[in-house]
Length: 84
Image 1 (cartoon, rainbow, N blue to C red):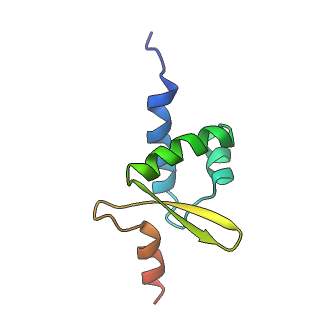
Image 2: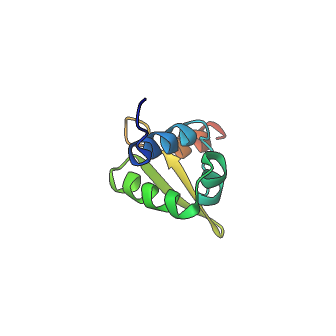
């Protein structure tokens, strides 16, 4: 039986979830989708931001999180550029 390592599984789950939501997600949205606590999401999101894989953007009172593409641009820049 394979032992599940939640720590190594969490970052890929966050990345996959953000990749399905180019419009960005809040910490609460991510926690609800992945079914973990906000505290857990905050911990791993901070690591992903530090690694340069996730971008944060303040929109009103919410902070949205986006997955960066390989060029380093935030996916949100592409979404908003399409609307122009």
